[in-house]
Amino acid sequence: MNAIEALNKPRWDDHDWGPLPPLTRDAEAEVCVIGLGGTGLSCISEALNLGATSVIGIDAVDVAAGAAGRNGGLLLAGPVDFHHDAVERHGVERTLAIHALTERELATIQQETPGIVRVTGSLRIAETPEELADCGRQFTAMRADGLAVEHYDGPEGRGLLFPHDAVFHPLKRARALATALRSRGAQLYGQTIARSIEPGRVRTESGTISARHVIVCVDGKLEWLFPELLAEVRTARLQMLATAPQLPIKYDRPVSTRYGFDYWQQLEDGSVLFGGGRDKFEADEWTTDDAPDAKVQEYLEKRLRERLGISTDITHRWAASVAFTDSGLPIARELGGGVFVVGAYSGTGNLVGAVCGRGAAQLALTGENTLLAPFQD
Ligand SMILES: Cc1cc2nc3c(=O)[nH]c(=O)nc-3n(C[C@H](O)[C@H](O)[C@H](O)COP(=O)(O)OP(=O)(O)OC[C@H]3O[C@@H](n4cnc5c(N)ncnc54)[C@H](O)[C@@H]3O)c2cc1C
Image (cartoon, helix red, strand yellow):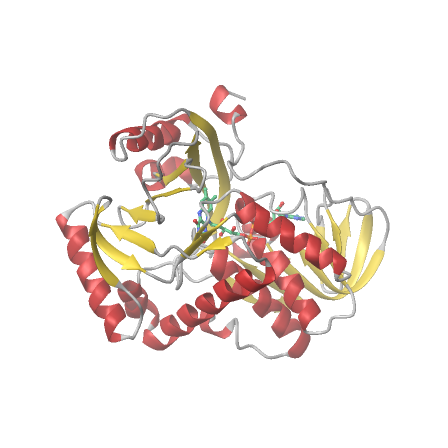
């Protein structure tokens, strides 16, 4: 392990967490959820809301050990594509349905875990005249479809302001939700790897879980669990860094630029988190390796220094895996026999993932499909 890899710790971890116990015996439940990131936890929450009599959740490591606890903390409404691009790819009805579901999810997260979301709005800032023209197209399409957007011209640059977007502390959110779910009766286990997943049965090294519904909520490396998804899903590494607190606060809202490939936000204590750069080293970043690497980290540091003019020390560098699809729509379906799979959010899964987790619980327990349908062909 080199020096950069050894630093692989997200800014979010305040170490205020006792790890989940491992599963140590055979067990039985109505619902078994695999993966305890934001998606799996939202799935369990919805399963309990819908009256599931017993729910077991397992994670190979612990709560939000993957991208769910290692991301940028941006809560952006809508699908991964900009609105006008999404309308072109998926049609206006489906795009607006996804937008409405993600906005509703933002409200649900605020209710479920108060004090963790800040509704700041978010900025899309253009880096070139072409990108500014693209912001213009996005503005026109969003206004035409009744969505909130404003032109923006400020210290960050020129572009668009989305007033309803937000930021959150992703790891605190996941840990708070996991604690609440355990007190509602969900049995959650860490250090428990699903070695085989079949209808009605999940085998781990320390016990077999029998369950009527099995719901897999995994984003990055999903193709490892289901090789049959290899043609649809591809894993990439996303990377970030964070600085020591730098005051006064210069950025009230998260910013994304270069068509969303770079992004940053400043936390309330003044630390700046900067992520992105994947497109600059694309061939190397299609990888299941989830440790930060020197090339992308150098790029992020250069952008932090030159674009933002920040010279403060860097305290954290980290990476995690996420999965992409060609369509930009997630994998969200029943594979058969009561096994459901949701994942592959193409880089923005904080809201869409939670919607899909809830949708999988809804489909499994009620047969209704109002939440997953907009994501399905
Ligand atoms: C650097 C970075 C920045 C990002 N920024 C943003 C952002 O600002 N906004 C946004 O919306 N999205 C962002 N994303 C994407 C977002 O983090 C993810 O899409 C989302 O968190 C996925 O959550 P999840 O719960 O679906 O999956 P994961 O976080 O992948 O969780 C899956 C869990 O399943 C467990 N698991 C895997 N295999 C097994 C197994 N066999 N048995 C048991 N458990 C298993 C893992 O340990 C993991 O805890 C970012 C991602 C990264 C990496």
